[in-house]
Every structure is written in C-alpha cells, then in structure tokens.
Length: 469
Length: 137
Image 1 (cartoon, chains in turn purple, green):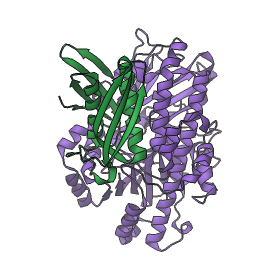
Image 2 (image 1 turned 90 degrees about the vertical axis):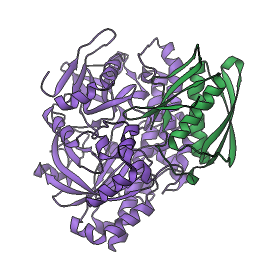
Image 3 (image 1 turned 180 degrees about the horizontal axis):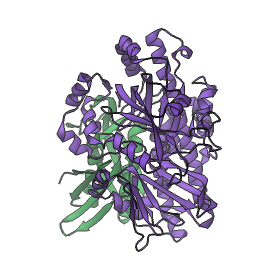
Image 4 (image 1 turned 60 degrees about the vertical axis):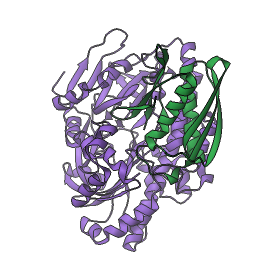
C-alpha cells in the first residue's frame, strides 16, 4: 500500500485484510517466520473491523502475533479474545524523569546500582515489596490503592494510562489460584524480557513535546518493563479454559485455539473483561510500587529526600490490553473492543482522555529497545491508521535457544560493561537470551512508526545501567 | 525418549514421544520445568499432588501442566520427579510431583508464564504417543 504498509488480502474465512506496518528490511524478517499467518488468523475474529493490524515490531507469537492489533464492533457481535491480550495482562512500560545528569550518575554509579540490585525483587519465585494485605484493594483500585498506602503521589496517577485504575474491575471473577499467585508478588519485576534500566536522554527530536513530557538532553531517566506477574498469567489461563466450551455455545470457530473468544456482550465476555481489569489493576500498582523503590534507591545513593530526586512519572502505558474505545469506522463513531497484544495505545493531540498538560502534544508512547542499544519516547499523532496504536518495543528476531548458542551470558555482560553499561542480573546465564542481537533494530522500528503515521519521535534514550531477572 | 526443546522466536516449546499417555505427560512435565533448569540428580525436598479432570486428553495435558505451574509458584518448588496415574479412560489423572526449592537452583532458561493451546498436539501414532506444547515465557 506504501513503502511501509503491506496488505494481506482477505482470503477464505478472513473478515478483513491483514495490514502490516514494516520497512522492506523488517518485512523480510516477518516473512521468515509464521507471523504473517497469525495476522491472517486474527482476521477471522467475529466483528473485526477494518483490518488485522501488525505493528513494525511484529514477530511470531501464540494465536495473535506479538505486535497485533484487532478491533471488534461491540454492538455487532464483536468478540473479546484473551489471546489478544496475552497471559501477561497489562504488561507495560513506565518512564521516570529526574533531576540527575550522566555526570551525577558516574559519581554514584556503584551505589545506585547496588541499591537497585538489593531493592528490586526479580527472577523466579516469590519476592515482593508491598504488603500482601493491600491486594484486595489493589485489585479494585489499582495504583490508587498503593498511592494511598504511601507509594508515590496523586500527580503520578495523572500520568498513568487510565489514571492507574482500570474501570470495571471484578475481583470476584478471578480464581483463588490467581489471587494466591499474586499475594507475594506485588512489587516485583519478574524475569524474561522484563527489566529496569537507567538511561540517558541521548537525543531530542521534538523539543516542544520533550519539554511537555519533562525530558531534556543529558537527563538521567529510569524505564521499567513488567506486568501482572503470576496473577495475570493465571487469570488468562483460567479464562481461556472457560472460553473453549463457551465458544461452542456461541457458534464461534477460530483457526487457532489460542484465539478463543466470545462476544463482548455476553456473560462470559463480561466476566473476562472484569477479571482482566482486576489483573490490570495489579499491573498498574506493581509498576507503581517498583517505581517508588527506584526513587528510594536514588534518594539513598545521593543522600536526598525522594521529592528532591525530581523523579517524576513521564508516563505509564500498557501494551497487553483489550479496551472499549470509540473510533471512526467508515466515517462513523463505533464502539470497539480494541485488542493490543504487544502494541501500545497512542492517543493523538487533543484526545479527551489525556491529562490537560499532555493534550497539546499527544500521549507519550514508550518504545523500549534492548539493554545494549537504545529506547525511544514517541508521541501519539492525529489520524493514526491503526485505531490509535503503535509499536511496543524492538521485537525479537531470534529465538532464546539460538541467542544462547551465539554467546554466553557472561560474554554479554562483559561486552555491556566494557561499553559503560552496568549490568545487575539475577542470573548471568540468562543474559544471552535477551542480548541486543536477539532483537530487531529499535531505531528502524521507531522510524517506521514515524513514517507510517503511527507515532512521532520525541527523544532517544541510551542505557547506562540494567537490572534484569 | 527424552523431551526436546523447540525453537520459537518469542516463546519456547517442547515435544516428546512416549509409550503411553502417562509417560508422555511425565516427559512433558519434566520438559516444562527442565526449560528453567534441569535438576539432576533430583533429590526431592517436598511432594505435592494434583488431581485434574478434562474433556479430552489434549485438555488434560494443558490443565495438568498449568496446575503444576501454579503449584510451583505458590509452593516455591522446581519439580523434577513425576508419578502419573490415569483414570476415567484417560480423562482424569492424579499426579505426584516432587521438587526442590526454586532458590536452590541456578536457572538456565526462562521461567514459564503459562501453557498455551497454540500448536498443541497430543496424539497416538504408530510408534507410540506424541505430544507438542508451546509455553509463554
């Protein structure tokens, strides 16, 4: 359709075409695996509108591709699919600004990294920062509950998608198993591709937008990536199990069992959305508690109060959610269930759901790269062609097995350290699975986002410290 | 025959051949926890028992592995020994899983978030039973 938009024509069973945002080089990587087949499979979902979209960081997933966006018309039998959200419900990214510079970090590098290493629970098994007694309130009210418990401030909530509290949460729709798994994980990073990074604002592309976001060149920032932990994984597992028989009752068939779905307007659909929102509330609160621990670590390292660190929340945005939003379809407003599976919401300037100070420039879109390259801050733009969605990261290009064969974890660590990037892994051996070479070029993903009209570049961030599971 | 780890860009999978549904489920369970870290020798610290019923053997495999993930997380155990007893014509089972404390093991792979239905195969072939499962990691 253009040099960065590729269309898969609607074939048998597809209700809409597939549409992939990619450069020629990125498209070659898509064609090497089954991701385009998964884009086509998603196009079978009942009630899907316009297209089955794939963001520039698309790669092979399970059911949905990672980087998939699908919007279904709620009042036309449109479905909700837990597979379109994923097991890590409301996994997302949070970025904190600061009053520190790179020179400040160099003076206290060891102290900062040691404090983060000690303070951030991560890796396999139990370990949390917040008290398990907060959990019932967290499931109902998300980050609001932990702010009231002393983690962060009200101002933080204004800079969270959904103000850190998903509407419609129904903790009673969650299993005892899910609650048990979440009890000892509130304020924990997890493992795999989840991380905490100390970064430096390396390049400002859009000065006015950066100023509104509170970013300036040379500023130290902290990015963290995690989600709803075992509580979310269990909720998705439980709901998928229920949806098999429910799908048969609704006469729905899909080409991959992982795409199991039910009408949004059905008891099963409403139950899923209630459980999903409660899990999302856990994830908002989880990132909030971790961010508070980050502030305390920096305050301790620099002998300051938490307030004096200037570590304000730039934004917190999810990339694994299904949300009821109104968008124009064929020129008319339609209520849609927008699934973003490894895709970021990207509201453009003027959107009423944005806080007043962000409204002139659009929503911050956070695009984490790899621990050895860069990350990007983008902003939402008007006339986004994919229901206000953009990429969520660099996107894997290599399996974990292949990545481990290429280098040992200690080699990856040594290479990063030699480049001035402090690495504090829970497990050194696992570092190679997340090595920079296992991912696509994040600069190219950001460039395609910009050229395809998904989001505009604001600032580039480079890592100087990494905390991993 | 031991399980094999399958390549997947973002996640990971395993496949196994076995003589019976019981041994197939045992191998798949061993593979799922072996991705995180194969424990050898498996000097069991504690045992847990799970009982699962499902409408098909495929679902029984997914539900059993999911239940083991739950037990692993809440009990803080990495399982390495499995005893499976099938019932109700292969639609139910009792599984005793023995494990070691998670923190006693250095992980050599990513922890499993969940068991998916994507690319799931559980079937009897001329040579025995075959199973393939992909996990979200």
